[in-house]
Length: 148
Image 1 (spheres, rainbow, N blue to C red):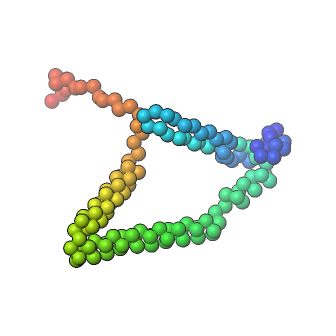
Image 2: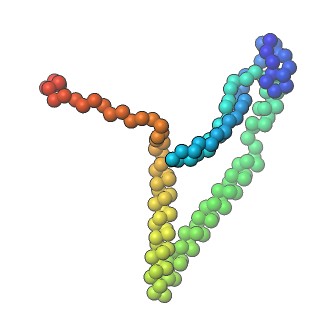
């Protein structure tokens, strides 16, 4: 006999449903050369009665509302990015034709720095490097050991 993790009722071995659920959370603040904040949700395999398992399954079922909100936010983000790019290009065009080259240099620098930061962020997200892992170099090979 086991107890349900949520309602604490006793359940038979045949009726036990197991599900990976969050059981605790922890957070911490690290003060060092690089300060940081951590927040972890710890998950574990827990025993549930059939009623609690059905209730959790109904909560975790994806709905149409979440997808609708995600699509609307995506479209709004794309429209904002397009509007900002058009505004910068139009500002460069107008400033160039009026002979205001300082504004042109500023807008080109703004676009270049933003583009470089975006490219660096995309490149960093593709290659995950763990700074805590120590890099150990291979021992040097001797010239005399080796087959020809």
